[in-house]
Image (tube, rainbow, N blue to C red; front, side, top):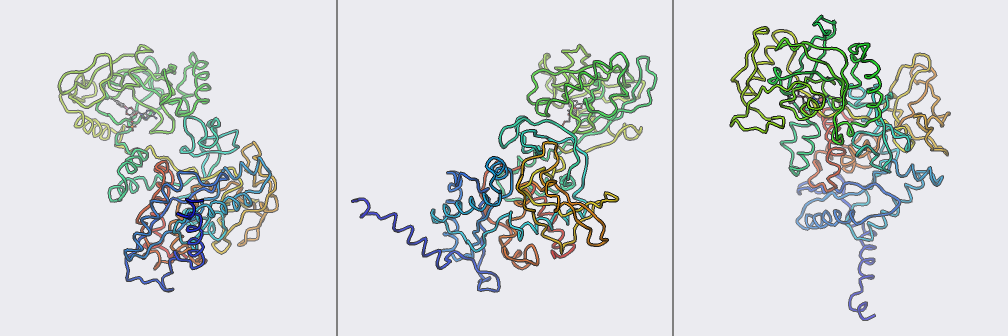
Length: 583
Ligand code: ANZ
């Protein structure tokens, strides 16, 4: 009681919080509605939370306190401060909870948001609650769907049959970024590879811009480095090898490999194709067929991670065919091994065991020849290991091909070999990226519906017109996954059945939904103009408030949300400033 009189903490906070609430103290007026635009602005943003059932965790106020201090400081310094809060509320947990308890995700989400809001308010943060948004509101996801239509119009959204990360327990496919160590990021369930028809976004066509523009970005260097590695630009060459039989007779097939070290071509003593390589069946000899098939079956059950980083021992099988090394004229064997991935480069490599550690390990195990072609500049190297650095070329000339790169530095030799293959027509310079197109569909209920339909008679895909947006999620009582990969929305039969407004033809709706990342890709724009029903964000408001000055959130989002958002932003800039207006 003594302490209470001396410091009535449970009276001060509620009193002032009620005062702020009543007067809307932290409301930021709009342009044209009392905002003094002659003042400088500061847009201070927290990565908006997923409102989970558990309420705030200690990590939330950790960042929010820092941005709150800064917001108050900037206000006192005379800045117009935009400091909003909202909810990234679509996604798996609400749906998993719905399946377990039979509560509609809409109900759970609304309840969780209320709880989060009360908790945040009780911490006394100075958010402008008049700008609150949720990705699950039709008024918001109307614009997420609108952006999808713009991507579709520009060929940046497409459908493809792709091997996806299929999680049987969750009944959905997951993005690469959502799979960690072969299990789902949420829930930790096993994930396998399975081919399925999916919506994809062509983020790879922005790979160069996403990489180059990092240099101008005022972001922590560590985050930029994670994005650089994730994009993973590598420069090299594609080289063609002719497949031959044991006697050197041409089999009529050409195998293209991707290499970052064309200089080491004289050290290529065997080729390796991925187990999924399309040419493998035709390269497999009758004697080797049973072995090869057995091997590819086992490989199909492994994740990419198990085949690369987690793999303790390299394995492989001889295909029974050979290829001619164009530089040496030698006949070298073609193997199949799962350390070569189908999804990268051409899915085939020239193996140089003297200078690549993976090839070295493999060559030792299967007793394949190891030929040194690079000598370290100082002459020292461990004879037990592959020497992977640059150096001076040795053992690299052949009278049969006429190529001689002996004595050259690796980098010069690489250029020399590339132009030699180019002028002889069996190869070309090539840039590759680790970045893959973004798998943009989920077989789930609680997400944005895709604004497209399929005509019954031709199966043709037709986008909705913009005035048909938002396409709202239908009510559904049973959200359980069908287990076959068919999304739960197929159960909303009346919603699925529709007609094309232009032709009046019968059609059906797309039943997969967008991933959780969709709504969070552009929400920072919406906070500038949260209630606008005619455009995503008013241009004048965007040019006053943009860009975000301070953004605080977890580094775990560096290659997901932060990369996706940069991609969408670049597309939106094109629409806003170079092409069409927003509306
Ligand atoms: C010959 C060679 C010699 C290589 C050498 C390296 C060192 P980054 O930098 O990641 O692009 N490679 C190519 N495609 C592959 C695939 N689908 N699965 C596994 N490995 C693959 O790596 C490119 C190098 O990784 C390529 O250059 C190739 O091996 C291998 F001394 O070719 B190299």
